[in-house]
Length: 139
Image (cartoon, rainbow, N blue to C red; front, side, top):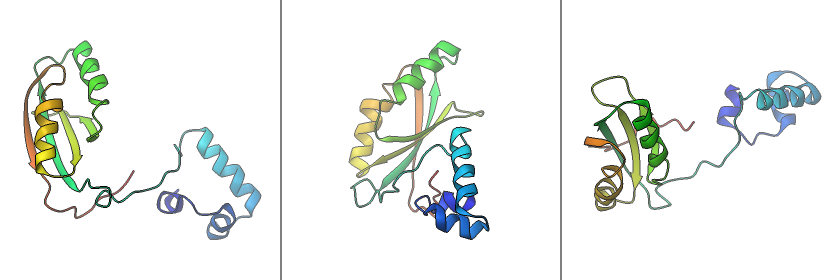
């Protein structure tokens, strides 16, 4: 798993050699890991800067209503905002933490004002602009 999480396109033959088993058992194990949901899929890791999306901000969101129906409405709506790269429900002084990726501060301001603060039940938000990614693990 550690090897595949870094080198997802590694051929099965090479993977088998590195973990010390033959190709066939390696394929069987790999298939089983996929079937059981340990491996969700394989994808390309793109460079956001090359796509014009290097501005990163984090937004704390507080809801006016945290009953289950309100949470579900917020969850469904936030999935529709392409600039929101991650959304986590938080146990703490606010309800959600969003990772927002845009081209620049003006694009972020527009996304915040026109999309994020317009989500269902949003009472308030606080924004934090990232200056540098010291560690950024792609999951």
